[in-house]
Image 1 (cartoon, rainbow, N blue to C red):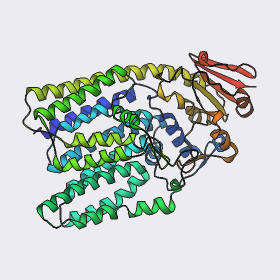
Image 2 (spheres, one colour):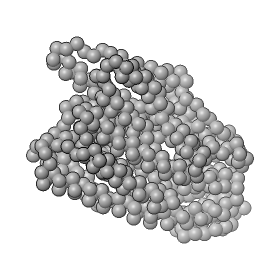
Image 3 (cartoon, rainbow, N blue to C red):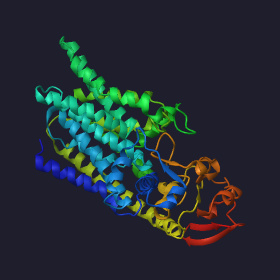
Length: 498
């Protein structure tokens, strides 16, 4: 067994490797990063920036989607918003990696390096899409799962403290993110199901007290969801439930390694899968019996989950992450490490460094383009209504993902109206005022355009003060009549509407 000092050294080193890309760029290539940052900025500064009050209002409510809003809100009291956002992302990665390790340790109190292989897919598709509320809550939930297992059979004062812990934790997870709480519930439910099977086989009396705690802790979250939360009303223009196909599930698994480097990501996917299969077949690896149940229940939930649930997109895809994390937590070395095992672990470390290097290179290249975009935004006067357009060449183009929401930095820097801000009623604690809400929800205000689609310039002239374009050579018809060029940086052009 590895020493405590060595284990912590490896854990810290892996966290540092994970954090490096965040701090080498001005704008991390995370799709929803700018709009999350802008929303928290409005939460903090709405009262002291009058220009923001033209467009936005606060709408705090019992919405199970507030992890980022709460944590970054607190951090932004003492640091700039973008630093607070980066710390939140870094903390999310640490919670996920530490949570896996704690779940693995909780079963037999043995420190293992193997669960830290989860560092290979910390930059998964869910992170790059920006599902930060969910991932942060899931990381906290993994520690809750570890505590459930670790303290389950303790008596005396520890038992009373355990009840208090879980009755307090469940509502916190609920308010952080509903799906994150769901991961926690499924994991401890799977664990208790496995223990129940053991009890039945051994003809022992089932641990009914554990089941009472397991269900009882969710009484308050259930009441909030059903009686107080507006989430039950659904989100605007979003189906409450919708089903995806098999391809949707397959993309979810591949998404664990999908960082927009097709060859490297595919090679990683195949290599990691092959190592796991060979390791299990040759007897190098085994599965911890008591952790198989949570992982299996999570896997079944992933297969059965619709693509949209409670108006949340990618409901099934996001479950691929906890499925992978729980199976990794369940992995055990079956015999003392020999040369093959050491080589495999060294190979994982090398692969991680190669992947991080590729990620850093692509993020820095994208960041150079983002700087041009944000330089053009710097010429926007305060309190203006900003329209943007982003045209994809074709369906297979890999676009620097935050570009769709980069215009949200105009909210932070210039108190602008930007229709792509995540300010959806019933889902977010910031909403658009009624006077501009219809503009934000109008399809003609959409940023994303496919090749050949055309922006309605008459609509833009009627409702907006400025337009910012990206790669105008892709426009079917660029802005001409009624638009005055104000600034041009690289592929970004800012126009004043006349």
